[in-house]
Length: 78
Image (cartoon, rainbow, N blue to C red; front, side, top):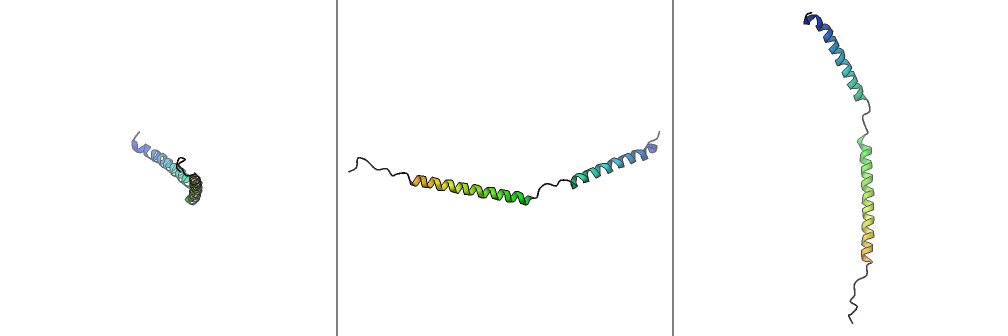
């Protein structure tokens, strides 16, 4: 058989394969596109605010604890 006699069948099979692959890929792109970045940014902002509040509370507690330490006095001084 000649290459030219098999060409229409082979070309048709390639076109069908290309068509199916393209439709499959387009269907995937129309699917789940993920979450919007806005809720993620809001969650991160909230976590940063909570972390800053916890750090400020810990710093305040540490400063209060340090100021309540009694000063050293020399017991032998008159």
